[in-house]
Length: 469
Image 1 (cartoon, rainbow, N blue to C red):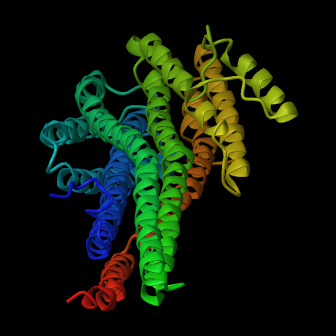
Image 2: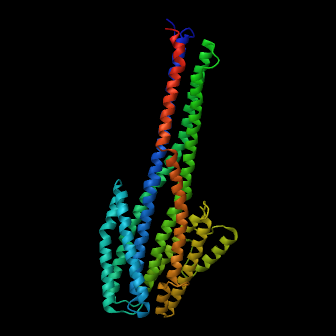
Image 3: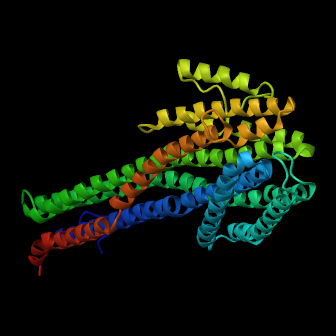
């Protein structure tokens, strides 16, 4: 009996059938590998681009809306019944209602997106359950303030007590819960991104190895046919080999493109989006601290420290103090403008170190300039209050004219929004590019190419094998 490994065993029909089976198996393996690798890319892109990243930015937007609600609530107590500030009171009420509607919308979307995550669900439910209590306390503070007809900057004790309850509820319960949703979504993005990059790297090599093996099997089959049947080339197998090579190159290119799009979407764009979204959310809470500082003298020291902590979260300097912060900021801004270095930390530092897209540098520079102007306004407000000029401090804090705090803060908010938009568009374009690369048309073409390759392989060897019947 002939041994399988012996040359006598491998008659021409057996050799052709064996190489044909190997070629068919490797072609199927190439299709399966491509499906696994590119299918994983599509799933990862869907998780990052269509679920986790939008959920993180929505949660940061919720934090921002809640913070500004509280800032407007504090401003209502600040302006009081002063007739000179009546227009400001109407604007403040309108802004409060806008932010309340925005928070409700963000909560509805967050609740829908958190359906598959028990931790996020609990955090969203906590916000939903307590937001009504917060709004009731703010409404009570407003009613008591209206009844007292208090002057600017001197709310009644009853109104101030109700507001204290409201702001404590917001800062101790609502904002941490909103931040928890943001963190959970950020963790999902980071986890999926790390896994996806590793899978793409290993997937590229797996696809290349299986593809090369498939080409080697096809070339081996063609060589066997050429030697055993004395044919220079088998047209069908030549077509299969060419098709397999083209498919392999396209598949490897798709994997490389997906990796590039993923880096663009996450590292270059999303990281800036989430840093700036957090910066904007913290900035609105910081702005609320400025108003709280004027509203509640008994807690002024605590609110001043809270303002500094949030200022540091946006642009951080080691050892900064309220009195010395603006000097450090001015020196850092001058240095940055001179050599484009980023001699500070915080969310804005993260963004300025991650500038990638056209128009992003200019937008980020506007954020830094507006942040500096706002900090200068804040210092003036505190100096006016310390000099006993409370109404002037309130006017500067709530004013919407150029050079007043709310005007400059609005410029800061708009600049942050513009920079977020630049990165958001880049992220959307990168995700859309991957979706386009891996859509149903690509899948259909891949299935069709595999079917053609299998059919041509069978057709290519069938005439030769029929000679032995």
